[in-house]
Length: 338
Image 1 (cartoon, one colour):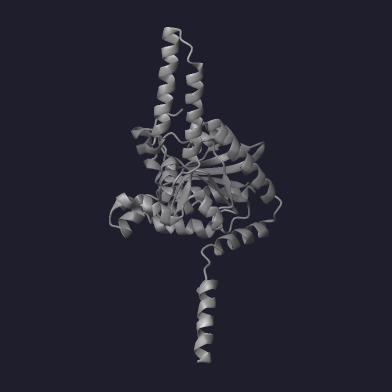
Image 2 (image 1 turned 180 degrees about the horizontal axis):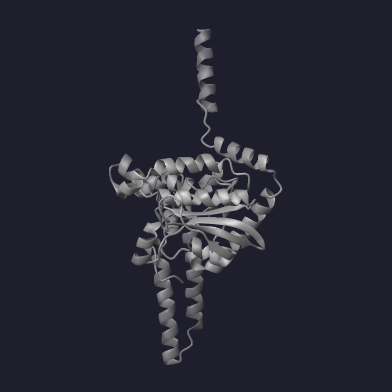
């Protein structure tokens, strides 16, 4: 079990501690406590099941940000082979917040690109805390164009709170870099699969997220803004982040209902951080299935499908709800009779 625990996981931590103490007591005093251990273990399993089956949107966000959650390089290590990292945007520098390169996925060549966070202060500074700069998006697009020329499918793994909002990022035109990626990803002739593996924040996520398939892991989130940012704007106070998370409908289940995500990738109970190998296995199975389906489509069909998918997002109607419309019609008819 991971050493880092979230607030809502405290009941599990306490039960685990009690089980450990009881085992130690039994060993030291040679006393049989198997019945008590069985009862506590059963209670732990039931509590775990109850907690993780009733997570709020804010708790999902917390899990998506778990510092021990597997990142892009962790999945690359477990799912792909022969990974060759390619660096630089050929304009300014290499952005360490985005990694990418050719690899093999179950014997087939692919281009894998993803955002990367750090595990401690030193590595987080090195990776800019997972906030990509303009050169990161330009590097990603360079690699995608290379994959397009080589007729190799593209897989992007997204885990970022957003694009880097600093002055240096604005000076090098972050908005333009993301906009160019959006435009040019629609032109790609090869299959593109985008996977939200943790945080999917705003333009930082969509900058490498235009795919024929958009997949999301069970405890990941995808949103136009972080809950804290939304709370700061609407309520002028970040403490309303839980309410903002509810309103943003950013969970995997909601995104699937809205047609933003195409499939939810299940995670080990308690989150991907509990079992890297199992999480990678589940992700690999879903990737394999979608890649097999997309490989059957022509370049023209892939581009048309990708364009149609994103054009359909955000569709709405000004028509009133059916019940309201019926009531208004009945009222109008009554007035006409008078």
